[in-house]
Length: 239
Ligand SMILES: CC(C)(COP(=O)(O)OP(=O)(O)OC[C@H]1O[C@@H](n2cnc3c(N)ncnc32)[C@H](O)[C@@H]1OP(=O)(O)O)[C@@H](O)C(=O)NCCC(=O)NCCS
Image 1 (tube, rainbow, N blue to C red):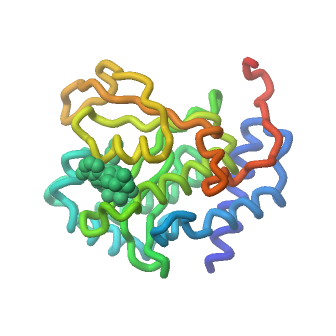
Image 2 (tube, rainbow, N blue to C red):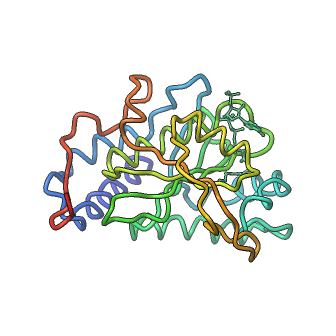
């Protein structure tokens, strides 16, 4: 079942890149890198990062319910009445987004691959400029153990490897010190305080913008999955 899902995802990624006109796109490359997606984190904490599937909805619901207070401060989708139907809708959205190639959301699981610790993913994908936004959350019971950093490294490797991204942004409110610590631990560069960058509960809010580029993950322990693959350029893309 998992192999079938990996094959399907490989095909979808290949289609996504072919849509970009990537001449180097080959099924064999994507199969190899897709398998790499399921590797465990290289850091001290053992996690598995994989796309969510329908059977994960109850675990997602429970994880969100257990962390309503802190998640609702960060994310508009998290509200006191968050129910199983919301989690099911979220998983359906994630599956559809993978199919469209518009977002690449993942669940973060413990080493067994069963217990859901949080979520991380790439969204706001700009195919023309090969950039995306990286988001993450970890359930309150699992924080301060390096889970977010380990997951973010894996997701960034996926972005710079199979997706061929060249820039990943992390955008956080000035008061979110935990998120900033994760970005800094990843090696992201704080670029700016961007004015009115986020709308938080209807209020335009300044935000810190961090960036990651492939070279930031050049440390041997966190080498991007696509390392060694020659740089690619979308036809017509400015040099
Ligand atoms: C931000 C969040 C994902 C961090 O998850 P985590 O698994 O606890 O993070 P890690 O354990 O990988 O910690 C990475 C670094 O951040 C630091 N950190 C974590 N929480 C922190 C906090 N509340 N204040 C200051 N630093 C913090 C850690 O100490 C660690 O640095 P260290 O190794 O030097 O000690 C988690 O707090 C969360 O889910 N918050 C709510 C959702 C959210 O804000 N998401 C980001 C939206 S932009």
